[in-house]
Image 1 (cartoon, one colour):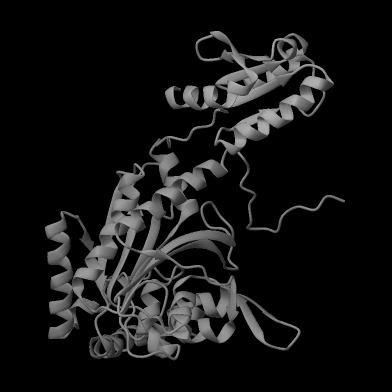
Image 2 (tube, rainbow, N blue to C red):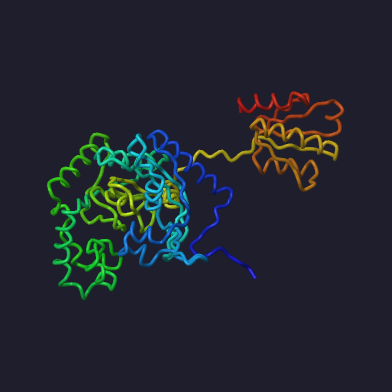
Length: 425
C-alpha cells in the first residue's frame, strides 16, 4: 500500500528547495536592514488565542482551523496565521517592558488552514511576516508597506499593485457598521448563509465574501472612507503622505477589509498583475491592529504588520520569468581508485569540508569512468583524483573542469591549494 502525503501538502525537493532558501535569506537580510529581529513561536497554540485574536466571526476560526484536544483535554490549534502567536509571545514574555520600542519582529514558518487546495493555496503553507509593536506613528505604517514592496522588488518582481484602505478607529467602524446593516438588510434573503450570519455579527465581513462578491448590493455598499472621523481621516492622510514621499505608488480600494477581525486604520494588499499568474492575485496583506495586544491580556499597545505567502511569491517570480541567482554546481568531486586511496581520500575530504569547501565522492563502488560521470552530472568545478600512482608520488591530480587544465598538487598542500582556487573560481 502506497502512503501519500496529506491532501493540501507538498514535498519541496532538492532543486526547488534552494529557491526557498534563497528567498528566505534575502527576506531575512532585508529585515536586518530595517532592524527587525527574528522570532520563532510554537506551531500550535491554545485555540482561545485565535478565537479571541483572529475573531470568532472569521472564516478562519469558523471553518479553516486544525483544532484538536491533547491528552489533558486542552483544545489546541495548529496556527492558521502568525500575528496572534507573535502578540501572545510579546505579552507573555513582557517584551513591552523593553526600553527599545517599537518592538520590530519577523518570522518565517508553516501555517495551517483547512480549505480547498488550489494552485498557490495549500493546507500547509509557509508565511513570512513582520510585526511592529509599540508605535501608533503613521510613519511606521509606511515603513511596513515599504518593507513589503521592497522585498518583492529586490527579488525581481515588477508587476505589482499596492491596494490601500483605512478601516478607521472604533468610532468610525461603529458608524460604518450601522450603515452596512441598513444597506444589506433589504437583500439579506439573497445573500449566502454565511453573510446572513455576518450581517448580525460583523457586517464588514460581508464585503469580503467570495460567494456574494458579484451581488449588485456590493457595488453600492457604503464606503468606510465616508464614515471616517477626523482623527482616522488625518491618520490615513499621513500614511499616504509618507508613501508619496517614499515614491511608493498605491491604489485606494474602499472595499478592502481583509479577512481578520483585528484590523483597524491602515489595511493593505499587494497583488501581482503578471500575465498568467492566476485568478487569485493577492501576494500578501496586512494592516494595523491597535487593540489586539489588549485582547490577549497585554497593556494598551498599538501594532501593525503583514504576511506574505512564500508559495505565491515563487509563483509570481515564475510568472514574470525571474531566475534567481542560485549556485547549483558542486565545488569539488573526489575520485579515488582502490581501497587504500579511498581511505586516504576520506581524511582529505574531511579536511576540505572543514575548510569550507563543498566536496562529494563516490559511495557506490563505481569505476573511475563512472565517478567522472557523477562529477559531471553534479556540475563539479574541480575533480580531485587519487590513485596508486598519486599515492606513490605523494600527490593529487586536480582537474579544473571549467578550463580542462590539470595540476599535480602535494597531498599536504591540497587544502590550501583548493582554498585559493575556490577564491578565484
